[in-house]
Length: 220
Image (spheres, rainbow, N blue to C red):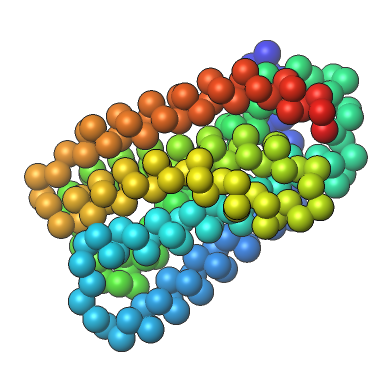
């Protein structure tokens, strides 16, 4: 089981390395958006909450551009039927979840420092900020994986993916923005409750995904 999951993850990373689609598009968007907003603000002093909102908007659309194709490319490469015949739905979902979470957390590790650098933000609680970004990114990646499976057969899956992902991600946005603002402006902000909520939300989404994925996968 573990070897099969590792083989699937290795296959996804190999395809991503060859195409570099998600990495190039996501980093380009994040860099252009961050630089553009930084120049447009003209060095204006922004509040911690404003920084948190802008940062999570950039991270959300980075996720939308990088995580939507994890199931779609199986359809494009005509390998979906092979996976259905030779791999169980839980195994496929586990591999896709691991790939999406790893990819998005790596993108976050590049995008967040880029934002902090361009805007000159020095978080008062860097450890709490890192924990919030990691748990919020995990929640976004978990949600996006299931949404990607649902829309993978749609013709306009790119636009549809963002539309159906946003309502599900709203609790993640609300909590992550509040915790991020607190970590930026308060040196004593622990953010333990928010991190726990984000992890619990992720676990709930993953549990529902495993319950529904076999139906979603068989209908593709």
